[in-house]
Length: 101
Image (cartoon, rainbow, N blue to C red; front, side, top):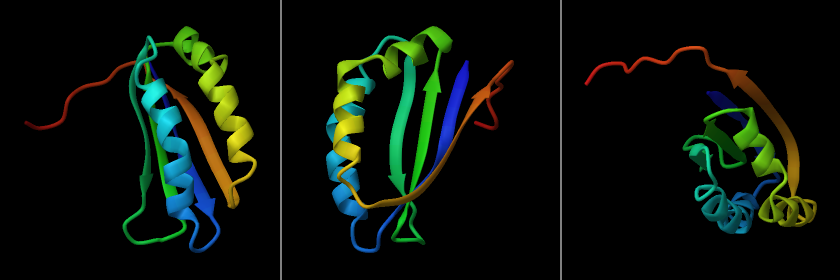
């Protein structure tokens, strides 16, 4: 299992533009084989911060995502948005256990 997680910074006043633009790509990605979770979430305390969270079955599923037409469309669209920074990491998970009930 893989986790992709990170932060994206937008210029002040443009976070909603980013979230509106990314919504079609999120919808398409959630239907991809091997995608368990995929979200761009606004930080409740910082109006310029978006948190990214992805959960994939394996490298093959993630590679398919990167090769998808909707990802290519998104990458072209993203160049037009006021992103001021990003830091995204991929984590390989050997084991996961549920916490609490």
